[in-house]
Amino acid sequence: MANVIGVRFREVGKIYYFDPDGKTLEKGEHVIVETSRGVECGEVAMANRVIADDGISYPLKKLIRKATKEDMAKVAENKEKEKKAFGICLKKIQEHKLNMKLVNVEYTFDNNKILFYFTADGRVDFRELVKDLAYVFRTRIELRQIGVRDEAKMLGGLGICGRPFCCKSFLGDFQPVSIKMAKEQGMSLNPVKISGTCGRLMCCLKYEQEAYSDLLKKTPKVGAIVNTPDGKGTVVDLNLITGTLNVSLHKSPEAAPHTYKVADVTTIKDGQIRIDRSEMEKLKKLEKN
Image (tube, rainbow, N blue to C red; front, top):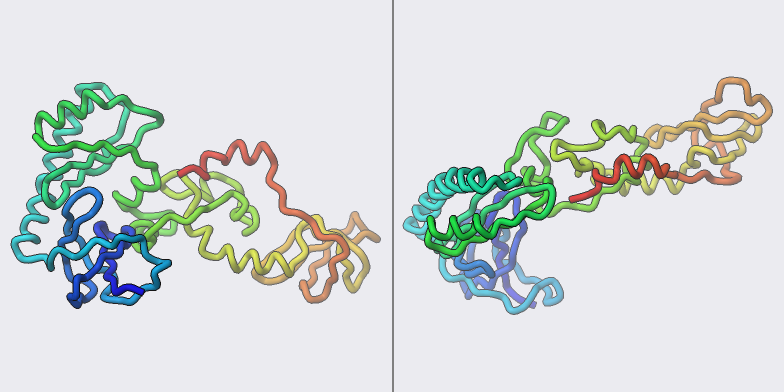
């Protein structure tokens, strides 16, 4: 067991554990800590708490100090430097005619390193760009290629629901989302309807998946053969939320399907949820990060 604090370096970013070095800290306070990329200023996202050893990656780095007014002034100064560095890097990218999109710039607290985040369709040879930037800024330069989901998380925006992006508002880490989830939730496999602004599957498909998976265990799927109060039939449509099935009766296949409650039928042979190969090929890109 260890007494730790949780520190976040980015808005809605991942929380990292640190040794508070005997100090008591409240959520929302700013602290100076040493990280793998240098000395950084972060916000306490989790006050002092005792955590089991198996939930901690040792060795824990110790808190350096609580952030002072001077430290916070330096953070604000770095933000202004980042804006200028962004503009300079954009010009250098154009000069080198590189096929890349600059997304964000970050100065480490101690100005030991500047990180430039970018997206690109493939690999980019940015060695000459790094040399130019190092000559201008006289410090260590790191260019980091990120995915479109990370880009959306950094920049923010509004989703098709009209609300701010979940990744920017409260999602600390991206959860895996699959085409199968959309299929199981009965959604149209139209890329426009199941993808977010980033062009990947909507993160919110994950939120209700557990409930849909549970309902699917109790509900005959499309194609299932069931016994109804009116005889045997095949499930042609269903609504998991309302618990209703549309069944084509075998004794009158030409007639309109009958509607039954799940509780009123028994499954003889269940159906399967399948995704056609053509659908998978068309939608495969949506699953990428």
